[in-house]
Length: 433
Image 1: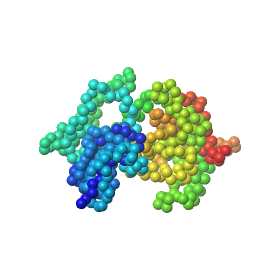
Image 2: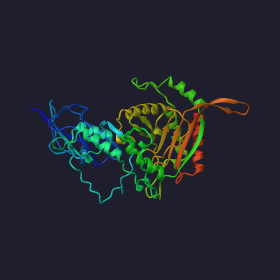
Image 3: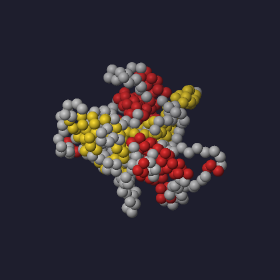
Image 4: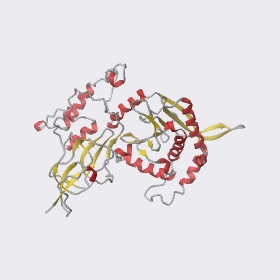
């Protein structure tokens, strides 16, 4: 006789009451390890919970619209191999293993905090939605809320054509951005029929763009940005980096190609600067009355992916060497590109680096990621003539763009910070003294 096993929600990080947005299986479906069971969505990420077992779904214990936390009973599976049957009593959250289960993140990005943003008069009851898992996935990729789509299939089920019609209708009459969402006192977004001037093509924003847009808008409007520009001489550092890259440590994983990038050095240099200028490693409390000075050093690194920009966080950078950071950058970048970042991977950053050097360009004005107070933009290094007393000599200069919150950091402190970064990059030996 086949055994039954209860499947509980594993540890997904410091998240409670996460929304169930899609059930991917039904009673009678066969599941295998890594097959998706359901999709959850927090205020920072959407993630698909995979099966760790092989068997037949007997019972689905959750539904779309439920809010669940670690330890919640999700499914009962009928196993086809001999396993020890779990107790009928659901495991309490505290009894669930704290080992993180790899839940591939479909899309990850920052969202504006929801507190105080909901109208208490708005009805929040979730209507029933009749659509297959493939239609739900299709709608999710287009950013369509199926609760707003009218189904014309059998028994009012939603079809793919219903979703397409809904999208075309929404694009034909786009809702204006309200003055409330644009910031106090700003006029509404202009409505323009661009097709009146020539041929146009309508392209929906990606999900990450839709989710990150409001947060970027909030940060740009609410934080008084100052951007300080400079160039760092990295001629000697680049020579040292190339030589060091040819001799990776013996502990470097053989399956990962050794890459000692400039970004690894930049992270170490930034942490040294945060030690010297602790106001950059801080956050304003929500009320704006107090400054929280952090004694830990977690650095966010912007990663360009086919699905949009995400910012995973590398932790305890002050306790790691350059080769350790190079390895971690390689791993976390691959996780970002393959949508395997967990919500915990995106939290707790103190300071962010955004490097466009691989693409090109020099200086730019990066937007601060609240609640951080500063961000460093890095351009592409270029050989330039530098006067050294008697003649111009060719030197490799790295463009730096430091944006900081003027409520916390004044211009003099901003200038000192970026000049100190330049000194460390010019002579990396300064990190030792």
